[in-house]
Amino acid sequence: MKFDPTVFENRYFDEPPRENDWRSTYSRDKARIIHGSGFRRLQGKTQVMGVGEGDFHRTRLTHSLEVNQIGLGLFEGIKKRRDITIPALLEPFLKNGHPVISAACYGHDLGHPPFGHGGERALHSKMKEHGGFEGNAQTIRILVKLEKYHEHKGINPSRRILLSLLKDPVNYEDHPQSAQNKEKPPKCYYDCEKEKIEWCLEPFSQKDKDNFIVLSDIGHGKYKPENMSFDASIMECADDIAYCTHDLEDIVARGLVPKEKLMEKVDSFFKYTSEIECNGTNISINDFQELYCGSHKRKNIIGKIVNLLMTNTEIVENDNFEHPLLRYRLTISKKLQKLTDFLRDEVTYRMVVDKPEIQMLEKKGQRVITQLFDEFISEPKSLIPNWSEMDQTDNNERRVCDYIAGMTDSFAEKIYHRLFTPGIGSSREGASAVSD
Image 1 (cartoon, rainbow, N blue to C red):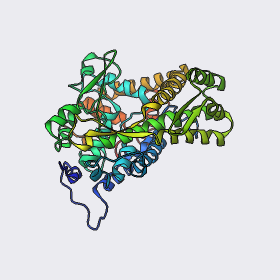
Image 2: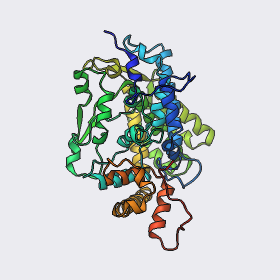
Image 3: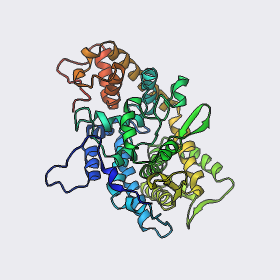
Image 4: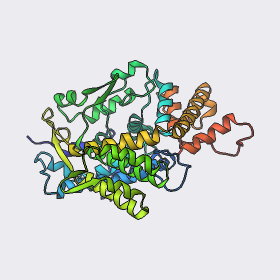
C-alpha cells in the first residue's frame, strides 16, 4: 500500500509560494512560527519559575529552543542509529521531516497563557460555558486563526504542521471532562477549530480517524487522548526530556531544593537498585550527588541524563492504524519510564511546583487573570485595543480570552495595575498585546 506524502503539504486556503522562494512548504511554516509574535512572547511567560525571578532559569522561549534541539537530535538518531529499523511505509515521510519537527518543537507551547498552568486554569474557569480554554488547544487556534500572517487565518499551516501540533485530537464538546465543570481543563481542541481539524485529517481512512480520537480513562474522572501523529510523538519525547532534565538543572542551580532533601528523594528512588542502566549507560546516586559539585559538573550530569534518554528511544507500532503517520510513534524506552516519572513528578512537581512559595505566585497569577477577564468582559469595546479588528464571528468571551492568553506575565501585571492600582498608568502608555 502506498501513501502520498505530498497531500500533507496542502494548506486550507490555497496559497502559492512567493516568486523565487526555494524553501519547502514545511520550511515556510517553521519560519512563520519563529517570526510570529506568539513565539516572541514566550520569552515573557513562566515555565516553572516566574520570569522575573532571575536571569538564569528557563522561560517558555528558552524551553522551546531546547525542545527543538532535542527533537532534531531524536529525528537524526532515527535515521542514523543502528539499533532502529525504519519501517518502509514511514521512510517517505522522513525525507522532508526536518522542518516539520522544528516547527512542532518551536510551536508546541505557543498557546500557554501568562502565569503557567495557574493562568490556564483561571482562563478555563471563565470559559467553561463558552468553549473552554486549554493551552494546547490555544496553540492550534493561534496557528489557524490568531497569528497575524493572514487576517483571521493565522499562518494558514499545512496539514502536516497542524497534525504535528495536534497533541489532543478530541474537541471540547465531545470530551467527557467538559461536562464535569472542573477547574482543570480537558486535553482537547476547541469546537470553533473543528472544521480545520477535520480538513487536516481528511487524508486518513475513516477507520484511522475513529481510532485517532480514542480516549484513555486515567482515573478520577480524567481522560487522556491515546494517540498522536509520528511527528507529534517526537516533539512529545523532546518536551518530556527537556522538562525533566533542564528543570532539574534550574532547580539545583537556583538553590530551590536543598541538597539533603533532593538526596533523600534520590536515596528512596534507588532503594532497590544501585543504578538505572540502559544499553551501556547508567545513572546512579553518585551522579545526583555531583549536581551540587559546581556548574561544570552539573552541566555534565544533566547532559549525561539527556543523552541516556535520547539514545534510548524506539519506534513502536500500533497496527490499529493504516497510515504510517499514525501507525508509528517514537517513545522513550520503557526501561527508563521510572526515571522520567521520578524526575518529572517527584522532583520538579512535588519539590518545586507544589511548594507553598510557588503556589502563592500561581494563585496571584490566577487572581490577576480572573480580575482582568471580569473587567474586560464588562466593556470589551472600550477596554480592549483593536477589538473591532478581531473576528466578529467569535463570541465576546472567546475574544477576551484570546487577548488575555496572548499576554506575557509582565504585561498582564502592567494592565492589572493600570486598571486597579490608583496612581499607576498614564494615557500615553500603550495597552495592546495582540496588535502585532
